[in-house]
Length: 183
Image (tube, rainbow, N blue to C red; front, side, top):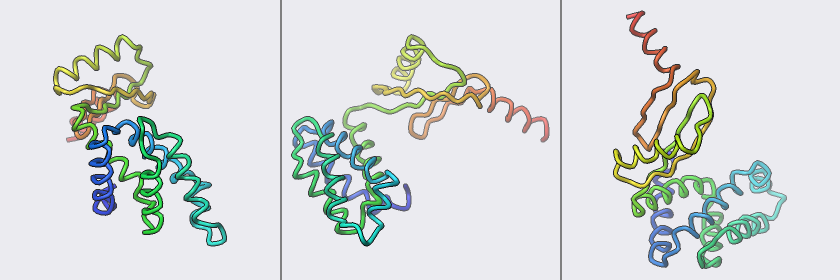
């Protein structure tokens, strides 16, 4: 993302300001995510790159997908204007970066943070709730916990919240032990 942040930031900040002022953060969140998924789709990407395909028609499909996903009273004309502006300026490729930046701005305002819990074995809802509560006390923010299963960890778990990483996996423990033994 770092290479496109400079291009994406003004768009993300403008859309965020518009969404916040209108009280439509959730609706814009949905619309932006849908548009980014549409642009990231291999078939759509090939259509956008094909000079024989009407680019406006493909952009219209992206706009329709984003507009259908927009909730919370979001003005679909504004969503359409954003997608068309990005397309006209050859910047649809930064849509995923706009989404990431928008999500960060939204999380700051809502005092929440996304945390990815990666574990070697399934973690039940009760355990996830305990982890979420502990993180909420430690970070002082609302926690949006997302679970990923990764058997390559061998055991234990890894938490990632932005730049904060808490790694209690057996794989990492073994790697540290191996490093200590070889030094």
